[in-house]
Length: 229
Image 1 (cartoon, rainbow, N blue to C red):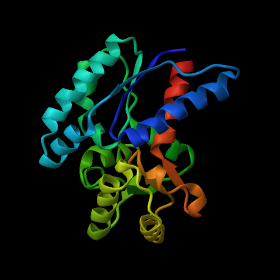
Image 2 (cartoon, one colour; image 1 turned 60 degrees about the vertical axis):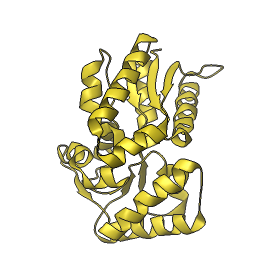
Image 3 (spheres, rainbow, N blue to C red; image 1 turned 135 degrees about the vertical axis):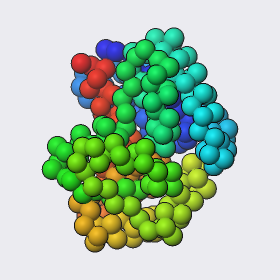
Image 4 (cartoon, rainbow, N blue to C red; image 1 turned 30 degrees about the vertical axis):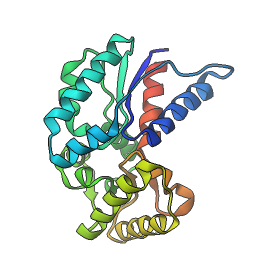
């Protein structure tokens, strides 16, 4: 079994989900008392969040690249960035290390292609929904990406930072998210990507008939497949 490196704490609310899923998937595959070999570097998210909203991506890349090098030095043989948004600086992080980086958008694209989906809705932070770094990874695989309207994007972003990253699960916010999912489906989306690792804390497949693709779960599953070879 290879050792999985995880850059976490963005937020820790979803990092604990990653840790659980990595271990559950290893146990399912190997049985008994088996669990995942994991090296975790958990950042102070307040520092990262401030830099995100300042648009200082170079500094976030520096911080996370140094963290990734620490993870590699600690014995990790593959790296996960436990957040969709910070894949904006994935190329810089990848260049700073000598181990493979499993990109969350690539893992998600593969699942979509396997399901025969070529038109997908995307929920996430404003950065993920509005900037090209995530969408273009999907479009390169021939998958058309639909995003909510501007007012909906702002509300989705607000809920992520003001509620989900702080452990707040609100029924009114869940209803708002599900209404956006319905709108994307009505616009032709064959499903919706939960493109922020916290969104799966709020809405799950049981809440809607529209197919949901939880990137946290997909990323963890791919990591375990890689680790077990």
